[in-house]
Image (cartoon, rainbow, N blue to C red; front, side):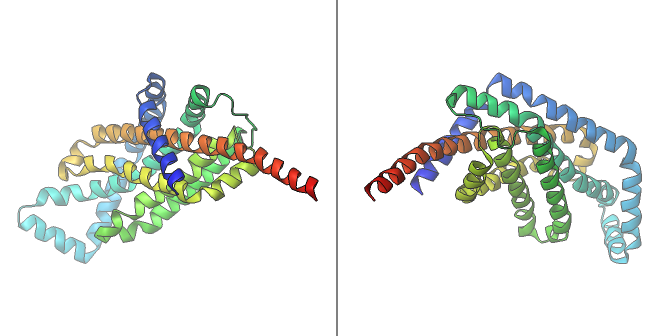
Length: 284
């Protein structure tokens, strides 16, 4: 247990230091540009129709319409006008977050793993257990789809104050754990080694995912500007996406340092176990 905690903390500080590397900063610009382009495209083609649809739905609900009418009566008409756009933004942001995670896993993770391996694990053999691009793509697409479904199904529970602070980070944390652990080990570990490591280290790896999931929830705090968030939405989306990309880059580095260290330790154990088995057979 102590060894696991020590490895987690060691990987944490190493990942934080690597985030200041110029190459890491440069690599973060690619997912930022792609996600920003997606956000702009969705806004350009679907913003007005989505807002009108949400507003019509709200007006059709008697209880909501009465509440909004009361808010207008007490002088909070700005909130009534901004409610529909705020709901659209709340629905669009998780999609952008999952997409940015997908882009980071697809484009940044291989480069970051190579960077860490070249600087710290040069002697670690590459067994190519899952390095085919289509394997990584399929794994990422499938788990991103599952995460989107879970986020969609959990949205009604976000109305319960404690759960909105628990469910999205947990889902994003599970997604990060499944994607990053696979991609980090894809090139260096064999299939058997990857499966063994993900089984033996499931708890710490899931813990890394949940912690980074909560770190990923931090950029959402910039949307706490209420009505002003709608006015500043283009800028806030860009800033949010960049922060999410940096968090996911840090997550990748954290998983990389932890997983490759665990892989090196696993391979160091295996020869010793083989020697012990051979000695026992010789005695018999």
